[in-house]
Amino acid sequence: MQLPPEWLEERLERWPVARLATLGPEGPHQVPVVFARAAGALWSPVDGKPKSGAELARVRNVLRDARVSLLLDEYTEEWQRLWWVRVDALARVVRPADPARDPEVAAALAALRAKYPHYERVPLLPEPPTLLRIAPRRVVSWCAGPGALRRS
Amino acid sequence: MQLPPEWLEERLERWPVARLATLGPEGPHQVPVVFARAAGALWSPVDGKPKSGAELARVRNVLRDARVSLLLDEYTEEWQRLWWVRVDALARVVRPADPARDPEVAAALAALRAKYPHYERVPLLPEPPTLLRIAPRRVVSWCAGPGALRRS
Image 1: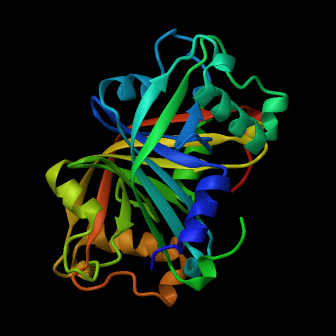
Image 2: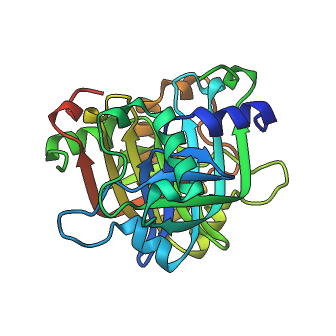
């Protein structure tokens, strides 16, 4: 069965982690990400460039092909409580020159700070600031049954 | 930092869930899966056909393009304990006529039953029996630090 709409919304709003799949030159690429909802999209901060100075794979991939998948789910040994939400989406790499002066980006950063208290201690955006803006095209959900419906 | 080899092995052997990404006609496709290691590969059972009678998307996708990604990770609010293992792999759809008489498949089913006691109550393979055989091409890992190294 699908997740009821109010539960789907709750997961998209509050679930703390997702797995992002992008299209790489050698096949699909996946990485766990944090994200927050703001301004009609899901936003995921990119933590900075690896030491090599090369772009992160997810950024390179999105620059080449915007099609991504975001998967929210929770594993538990109680299989009757399993659920997942899959967001088929188009992603864009956003590099705001001045994050505070871009209203969409400012809303995204505020949502990320509100969702993750970690950003009181950890810098949210390194230089240069990079975010993925993930615009859902289709949202599909599944749950094993009523046992999957509980507050996260 | 990477996960030390013994930890990497432990995760591949014992971590109960992974996210499987395949290449779909409209972009990457993801789904949470259970899996077990046997006969030099990772094996994931396919739970059966959806009611529509159509193949599951992951099966259709693998039949068209074998390139897949399997991601193991654990989210925790303690970000210094985060880790992930990404397996870039080639997958094959395996439909054994007689699972008990195919030594690789028999080993895979034994490993799945040993890892998931659920299969004492839940049928492991519906008719027709379908498994994904996932052969790693490259394994990449990351962890935030020594805090990520603890028994799962």
